[in-house]
Image (cartoon, rainbow over all chains, first blue to last red; front, side, top):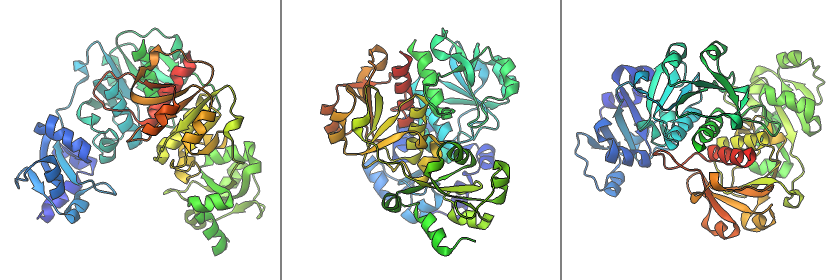
Length: 245
Length: 245
């Protein structure tokens, strides 16, 4: 049985402050947890799962790292409305640095607030082989449980750098392209082998004071009446346009 | 003051059964409501808004179609966690028919369940000038309040046809392309001026029994490790690839 203290500790990882201070986060969902067990076991602090999960996975709970919990305990430690058999308490990776990005393409995110958008962007970065994402410090935390969930495991593979974009952008792979509604049509651009794609906030777009740090504003041409595109969808289209060439 | 009966009626529009039987739906958010007032007033049954909304909009509540409500009343009739000044009770448009699609591109959706995905797909269809969306009858209802919200007003412009895809696909603009994980790379395809893009369920993809009704399976090439893309992001990339050419 889990102690009250342990339950409180796991629950507290729902807060960014605790995640930062303790260097932890939680991951849920059978698929992501299978991936953790096979590919990222060194990041796993403890796994809390119901008996049927261990049976299906062919694992034996050891009471130390692999803990068996009841359905009721699982409900208490889960951040999901419908808990999915297991909760993994994870160690956050070492912080990445913008200096380690090389001649590649990276994504920089300015104030992306919606956890679903952030998770989706991380997932599609992983699809398109982007290894690093730069996040302004007013983005939603990538270790927010909803982001981890929406990323479908990709948050384990992508390296994230948090900070102030006015300081980080000049160190990122150049040129920096800002996605805006009044930029050059993306179909007319000759993309190089490296660069930074800057995506702005869901309702305000890219902050004006960042534009002087960018080489060019770019836009996805519109053929209809909608005023804008969802930030994650726009990121997907831009990455495809860069990678298809 | 709103009567209990009126409040119950508005609340009941949160259920698909009531929406279908009564031919109504609700729209919330100041932006979409401004759009309704200027462009779709004939679909508005009643507007319920707080005094400050009418002041900003330069409108006078008339107690018949334009109703002034208190903050407390607004909270009771809103489907949002944070109500946004106004709720519009709307008349659903006349059902569209697949026969009215011409030599154009349409989207067909097989069992899209997530309201955020559905709303985002409607919004990007509107961006790319797609006028008709075909939905299998196990898709989330496009007049679900969360879908209306995520569509950012685009649900007012897009015509939706609901039904059984095995019956509808043969009547849709040909050829039908199914988005799958093992199809031909989209960058190698010569798109014509018409066709149907078939997008599958978020976790199961396109139902196997629909594939014989399609001309070709198509895929977005992967450059990384993620196993799949979010359904709305994939739809956005595919529409851009079709429209860019």
